[in-house]
Length: 571
Image 1 (tube, one colour):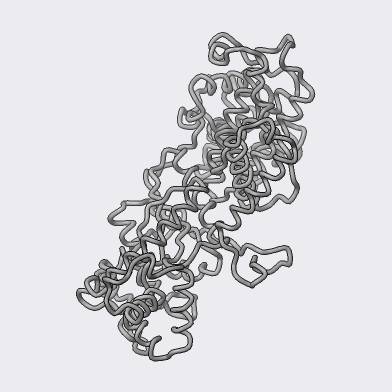
Image 2 (image 1 turned 180 degrees about the horizontal axis):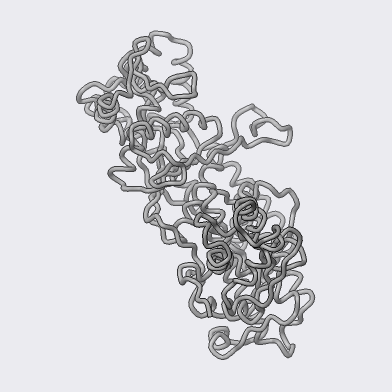
């Protein structure tokens, strides 16, 4: 009997791939670079399918082979499969597709094992140990707007999925606390408060208004603009020249950012642009010593093959810019943080910038040439948040919508809907507030993360909690009960539950949270169908079906957690 690897214990696709790998070695021993092509079936022929026959035939035809075509190759692949408890039956269809039907008994056993051993046993296994996820990254002195929502929740979900997969994730908040806008604020502070001791939170007042006033001055006064730009050209001892009052502005901003992060249930570690400033000169020198940095029109640049504009790393006035900071940050993350995968979550408008930075790093030898090798970098781009008119989501005053206002509105609408359904009379005010927050914030996150689904679906989470209605002790049922997948809807639900591990791995590997959203949506549909067609409490199969309900609840809770959504237990 073939033993599948413990490393793939929760991943059906990988366990089957191991079996087909053994079969392929037996079927075509002369072909050493053949990877098993296993995919979940969408047709009625089976649960999974091995699709190697056609591509394999194109490799071996004309050689000394007894095979007469792809169907014969498929038959041989099926015949050479090692015996396994997980496979109930196999068949070959069309041009050699090997269809596999999994054993109901084996599926039930694996689900029951998860209930006893915990869902962490279904976590994907990656070869890397540490990753950096760079996300959110608002600017100091500016309020977070709806555009920051996408980076924040996408980055949080990617971090959660990697953490579930036992990867040490450094959640980095690369806040904009340096650069031109910072020089603008410094100069405005110099003018308004010549004596820095006079500066406090009350004197600054509305930080957003303070920023707008400094920006207006920057846009209309060329002398002020020149001073602001020079204020952030980094001379020796630059840190001592920054007014202490700027620290207050940073602290005020951080407090506002933290309020949003707390509401969204997101945690990050701040390492802003200024953190990497001391490393820039050494990084630029190292790149120059490797012959990458050249002079061009008074600036120092790196030319990237295939791109008609250079990557400017030192401006003509001697100052540094985003490229300088991002190269220093990348160097730090590779050499000091020892990260093997560095993921940047920003809008798609920054795609070319990061592409140039990554290519410069490859030229420097910081990263391997191949995209599939580690350490590696990835840019996760996302589009704008649009309104119903198809334009950037703004207020009537043409201002970009503040993120706190969006969250307030979501909670207000959720609470109003709950009150309309009479929940104010049934629940305490605390329960009403907590549920309104969970539904409102969860709806915003899911609406963004799902990305490819427009239909609404109402799912009552409490249905998964049949244990309460039965009065049974679930922990006792796990010890003495036996899960059986006899009904077709039981089996369909059980199979989908067991596809959780490969779904999370796919979402992680391809950096696509919407894959997990799609899985969660389908899980709710499979459960609803099971619940509608299979009586649970009071049936002869009560114990088995209660265990299946519990397994669904466990997987669904984990999906919600990975998406950063707080589940609602009563509604």
